[in-house]
Amino acid sequence: PAGEWAGASKGDVFEVLDAALAENISGANWRPSMAQDTAKGRPTEIYQMNGFVCQQGTTVGVETPVNAAITDVIRAIDAREVEAEYENVERVLTAAGY
Image (tube, rainbow, N blue to C red):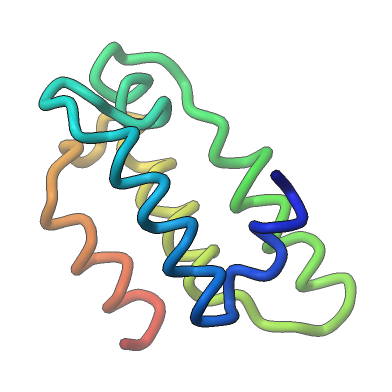
């Protein structure tokens, strides 16, 4: 439920949600929808999700470097400029300043 996700920054709530997700993704063939989209060459929903967070951050004067980096990397994957691979995690972290 949305109320639980809203409280995910609290340690105990995070543990409950993490355990629930772990139970549901134990299948070896499970993939998030965005990974399915990139694998099948379909456009992702990155602008509607992380791009929206960036827009709202700009509106209220809050920097969103991680969301901006994720949006940039996924946009590059959508455009076939980079491969969809695990190394993109490092690209995101570096671009976000971590």
